[in-house]
Structures are given as C-alpha cells and as structure tokens.
Image (cartoon, rainbow, N blue to C red; front, side):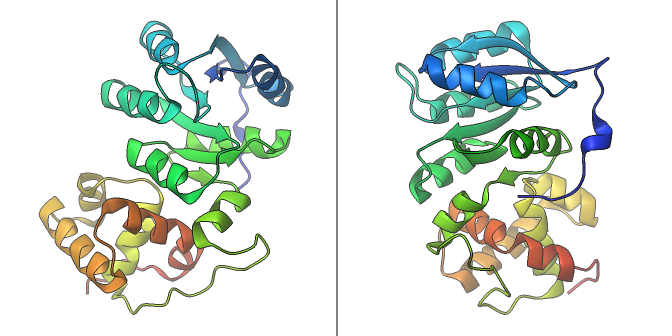
Length: 233
C-alpha cells in the first residue's frame, strides 16, 4: 500500500462522502468507528447488500464506497463492477476477510480501487481512502502477500523477467489502475501501441489475461516506480 503522507489533504469543509456496504451490522459499526475521527470523511449511508449499494450510489453519488466482498442478493464484486460501469468516478475499496487471491483478482477485474483486510487499522484505512482519491490503488500488506503466495514479511524485489524501459513504465502505470487510453495519453503514444506492449509483457510473464498482468504489476509496483523512466524502448 502507498506510504505517501496524505494527512495534509484533510479538508473538513468538503468531506469525502462515503457509503459503507456490509451485511453484518457489527462490521458496519466497526468500519464507521475506524473513520469517525477523520475530519475529511463523512458516512452518508450504509447498505446491507449489493443491490442496495447500487441504488444508494445512484441516488447519493458518493465519492467512495467501502464494500464487503460477500453480500446477499448481489455480491460486493458484482456491485462494484456495475457501479464502476455506470459511475466510473466513484472510488471503491473492498474491505473484507475474504483475502484469497481469487477474490482479490476478481475485485481488481471488476474495477475496485483497493482491497484491504478487515483487520485494517484506523490510520491505514483513512490513509487508504485519501490515497485512492488521488487516483492510486491501495492494497494491504496481507493482501499483497496472499497474491504473491508468501508470508507478509517477504520483500517484493526485482521481477523475475526482463522488460524494456517502456514496458517497465507501462507496468508501473497499470499498477496505478490506468487504462490503456490513460497510459497512452500519459506516455504520448496511441492506445493501440499500449495494447501491443501489454501483449508483449503478458507473453513474457506467461499470463493470458488482464488479471494476471495486474497482479504482477501490483506485486512489483515499488520496483517499477523506482526504476521506470520516460525513455522510449
């Protein structure tokens, strides 16, 4: 998860409007308490299932939703995908005890901006909310470790493949949640060229879908942020 200091962004005059979605009342109470001391955060509604979350998002147009993965009627992941399709500006952080790699990858594919374990602390959760609103993705250490298949204290180091400077750049931007069109604009290349690079990267990694590429990008995001350049390759 990003470690940049966003505490200076707190603005109580224009708070971040949040919906908490969880089918367990005790979880909703706990999440509300975790963010209750943040002056720049306002809980505008609570939802008990995915369908209600979608309806509330349409009506209230929140800035961000804290969403459980496993909910009745419509799952959190399906709700996230539908909300992102209709309201792409709404940020979504999955907050769940289901931190297996399959759930995380499905959430990423659905467009979630972050995935945190339910044992997250108050400071980390508030920091995650502020970071996501900057346009970055957030994942707790436990979730990243689950994706990697290692214990939390294992350091993610240089990736086990050789990428060009341009490919490293694209992987770094993929980790931040940018689309091919967004990456193209940032790097001054066409979306089609970005897709060509992505296909080459996936070939080198031996993955055949976007989720696999995103997982690799997230696991090695720190490395690529440090080593990525703007040189053409």
